[in-house]
Length: 399
Ligand code: SF4
Image 1 (cartoon, rainbow, N blue to C red):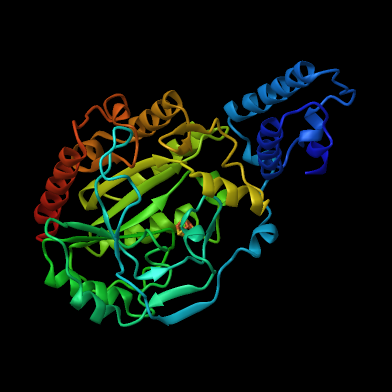
Image 2: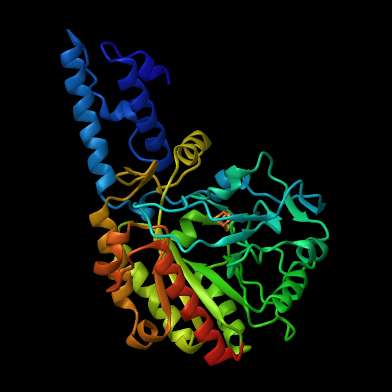
């Protein structure tokens, strides 16, 4: 950044920090760093330069603490279009095991983790959510469908104790529906392993994959968000209404469903947006069909932030305090407490009683104030989740 390079009196570290702030300002689409810097800047020494630096940083910090307004800078789809992934490799020879684990550390004081195992049946995604970390896992943009998934799953040695496996950690689980036989292969695996729940996770509105032969231990889940977040940050995904409609078609077909309200974004009007989301959801789906609702928020690694900043594509997702916790960056504790607690308060009592609500990869101290319950360890959380999931499947879906 030429402007920052030209500033006299700043240390290397101050210039580095300023460059990141300037990159974020570009993403937000409002004021630039030049606009915040005094035009008569002429420090006589490092102390005077530091004073100006601190004052500009304070202005940016105030912006981070003020919920961003989507209406001020609507995202331009043409700007994002280049990021859309459309090439499909239908016969990808996966070089190693397709089974993994969610990215949480095994046991941590900083977050509660349910120990989800993952199956990378499809790798890379055609949607373009601004905050997505999955797209950065892969060196190219081709969507790879693992070849002979049925055979691979037949040979898969499932470690003892594994009871839930998600397929939405390497792509969107229903982006390709059953076009390449993924759902058929997963169904065979789920039939052979009634002790395992397979979780599909999607932002699509596809229902053409539905089929009476799919076993009930495959739970379809939709990632939902407040409408302004869907419209401005989750590019090329199905609309909120279309996702809820697809979930209701699935539930009405007698299948178990679930939801992830993740990542919550604190934009201007977030309370109304999430209240509206919960109302639309609960008006459309009977809680009896719903196994779980996972709640979480924006969390970035250093490399996610680096990739986002270098993309220069408009987004407000980094317009937040970016507090560092266990090597990741997210909202401060008090903000999360308000966001998660407010969201949960919108759900009607029948949902609270019959659906398993949880906080995904969040500070254990958030559970009690937000959901009214907590666990002493990850193992306790996992055991309770498992008991609830299987009880719901057996009571309501005879699984
Ligand atoms: S749907 Fe999921 S995998 Fe696809 S771009 Fe969005 S966050 Fe990433």
